[in-house]
Image 1 (cartoon, rainbow, N blue to C red):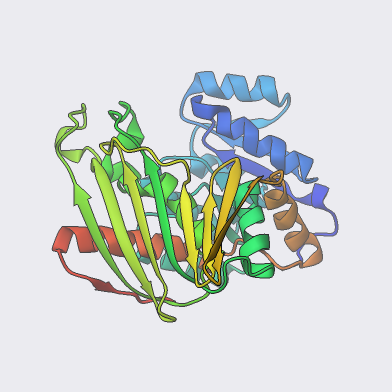
Image 2 (tube, rainbow, N blue to C red):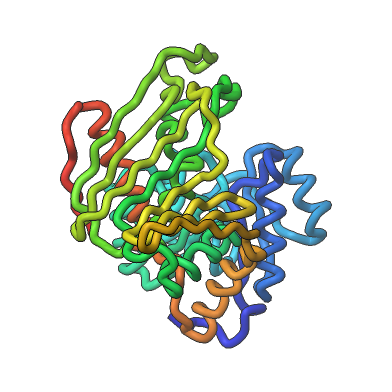
Length: 342
């Protein structure tokens, strides 16, 4: 979707400049590094707007999305707000003819993703999700060794796990209504990693959860203590995901890929490959390569200027959300949910 002659012609802005992790500053810095031009910030907190003007002298600031859309001439807007606001804000921006990048997750439900994708197509603008971890060193290493070098044969099972025994923090991510649930934070990352390895279409999802152990100010709206799901794929493979705050057993690796010829244990910093050939077991250990997260905005800029293939499309972003959404529905109903999208 080439729309610009040069990356610097793409005027960019962010919705959300909160203090947590300084993500507003991070996004603008990465967009600028990709050649685009930071032009506006929208933020409810006037103190954070002051910080934005200190970080980017001369940048335009707005206290409402409506005023930013009306008074600025932005081309691309990145949304850095709580999960349950992504769809509403994205649709507001898309309907104004702006390309949109949402912080992950893209949305909470499949229906929200569908509405966003449909509006982007209608307006002929870009919709993407900030899956910068698509280029983490751990998954780059895994894709090279599993997909290209066939180090463990055909992958038929993926086991992803993250968490420990820790009380959730008193912030918005601990609200199920706002965040979507315990699986929607790191869970979306682990699913996005896994879907780079698994080739089959999604068939069905079964979800499970435990709630009520941890007490927080969110009371009954507190996220689950633990959320798990099992996704079945059309080619016979299956994936299990667990995100927990009550499991006392820590794991040294975040994802275990099991193939017909061996197992690949993926850690954030290192990996282990265990294979067995003719009854002889061998083990290879190594450090992951350097990550290339900067490629996210570079790819987006190249897409908008040179019509390069967009890596993180709206449809790609919908796949992990569909699994999470079905997992939530299954855990609540006690029934396996059939997938709508492959």
